[in-house]
Picture 1 (cartoon, rainbow, N blue to C red):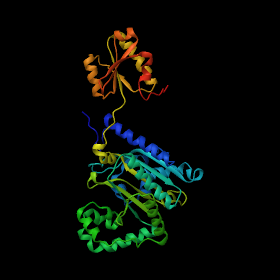
Picture 2: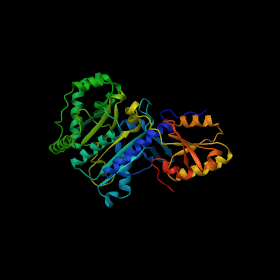
Picture 3: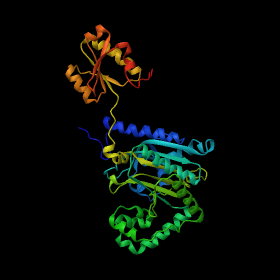
Length: 417
């Protein structure tokens, strides 16, 4: 028997209902903020990620799924931002649209050790706003993330924010960090000893307990920020305060990708353990230019869907569908049942019936297993009288309804075709 690939997951029908719910809520909320859906391909030239994420990032060094095809090397996308900026430029949206807002939903791929909430194929709900340096955009993006979580019915999360400043500020922070850590190298984990040379900012994000203790000892302030970046970050905090969005400033918060500059944020949840981030994002004001476009500001974020579901926990139960189940008794009733099912579906009524020749007792048990709200029963008696027996599965009440009046008795009916 074949088994699924390690680090992937079958999303079975019962759980898929939750995924659909998150996706539907996301589409509705994104529309309120005038974000438009974009669907870039799952496969890109690997050079796109090497250039945008940084040659020394862990994703590029260790986690990309690469496909070698003669002279070309492709990669399954490990994140969405680079693909969307590439699409924005390749399709000349910088010239035709200028400032643009996109959202996306779909799978990402990273070749890493599978663990709770961390798979090799995982899924993101995210957005990107390209074409503005305005601090109010930072506020909107963070408030949008907060708005989504509240509508997902997730609580108990924490929003942490920081500013990495401009490219020059980020370099000052990196140099300062190297000086602070130089005398503490022996206390760092082997991975962070390598990061010290390649990308010391990633040490701030290490989950190793010993490295966390080293970071606590460091005096990291915002002194590396230039005046313009400090003013920008102050405006962001003032905007969040005005919207009454709770957050905490975290000087050690960094993002592991080279393209981040300016405001960065992370949203964590205690239900996830050590890997507690359910979403994160920030500004990438130089990426558009680095990929061949104009110098312009941009910001976005992404939620991990699997992590959202973990945060939902017991509160994330699938809602029962308003299903109507048809039980037919006899061959004549089966023929009438086919026509009735067709009419119900045209009217927008979710319905199903027995295709396994079950007894009436077996059919009723099947309706119960499917959490049907109501059962319709048709037999010779009902055909002769021109009625359908309607049973409410919650109350157990049963009544006869004229066949031509049936659809009017069912709530939420809307004819689809």
